Image (cartoon, rainbow, N blue to C red; front, top):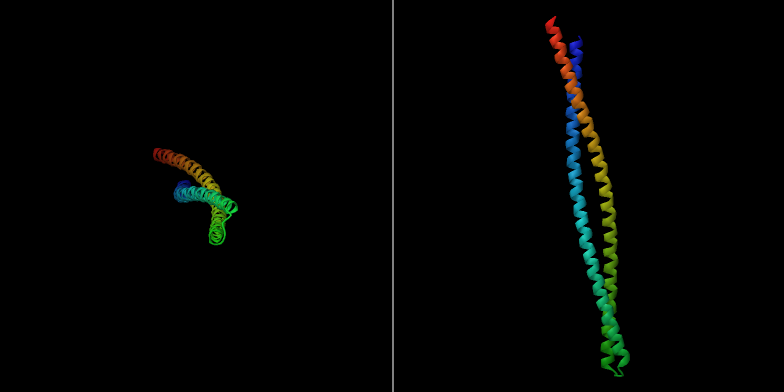
Length: 163
């Protein structure tokens, strides 16, 4: 009867060890997936940062060009068509500057969203790694218990055999 109890305990420990092993594998795969997603988000952040810098440089260039044209307009005493042409150029440059400014705002919004998501995924990865570590510890404990129970069973069988 005690032998059956030990066998049942051994079977239960085997099942728990198998379940723990499966859970560790699942968590490891999930951590790997989240790390890949985090890397993709970091690459997107880098890309958006570069785009933002490019757009800012374009705005500075357009603003410089705009001020140059305004100075030319102010200095020129010319009439008619030349003045109208410069007014059109200024209007076009102002529209381009507004569009570039809009693009910068959108890029900054995307950058902030990507940064928030990256932070979220980093926290998620840390939580999963912690859970994985706990499962690994539990698996190691269960393996030790299993080995001890197996040794106890073998000792018990030797004692029974010696009787």
